[in-house]
Figure 1 (cartoon, rainbow, N blue to C red):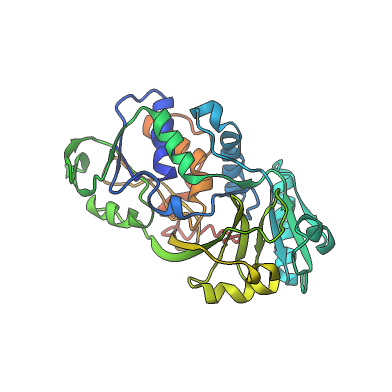
Figure 2: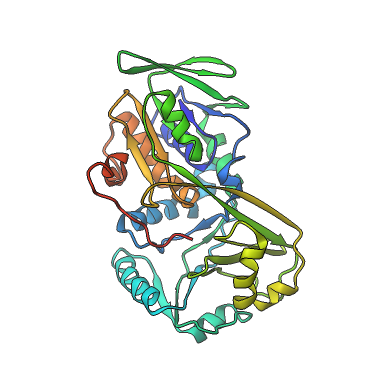
Length: 358
């Protein structure tokens, strides 16, 4: 059984079926993609500081680039790039180190001058910008389409409006899951419940150190004259970001209220202050202690697997992580070794921080 109908849960269901498991049940307490997945910016990038995250990104990109062939669903993947704007010498040094690592792994990322960044996004105010990084293979897609594509192609039994209320553990092993729609016999649980993974794990007597951080986004139906092929652009020191959303723009940042984002937005993209805001939404980052993913299987009870704590990167890492979870379930040789991301790393003093969190 897979618990959680976002991108990670749907990916796990799809890859379980792809590896030959026929009796997969995917349960979601609300509707598919109704949680953090649908609230995300839909960003997909390989520009990370952690080598394992770069490898996960490359594996996931391969699926995103061929998603329609794999599932029959068009996810509107716009590979217009990611543009990071850097305004401190410390950030420039950190990103240069990361660029060298990314390039050694085959990522076509590169450093840009402020002038070159302005050529990609002419409306930018480059005041204080020291450098930028850009990767043309990065981009953004429709999160809801990814979930629907994976779920439909998985052939899994999908139960929506189905809340998990208990996990039956007998003799150290999972025997079943109690839901609002009845009890389901299973000896394996794959938990992909985002912020609520901590609560789901507790039902089985396990502990996942996940906390929530709210993030908001806003939409303007006008584009302010920005290019059609607009990279997802991030003012790294403030976390203000924006990208194309249909005919208009979507933008957000670290601050939960528009007033908190407006100052950084007006300073870096002045035209945005002149555009009307039509709608907004917010969702949770499921955050781990080192802002990096928790992926693996608990020591007990058997068998409780998990993928959570992605700190905003769960959607874009879903293809590779879903594949890994399926491989763990079947005991198959992993395509990627993600053992460094298990929750045990904290007890072992092996924290694995990801620096490039927006």
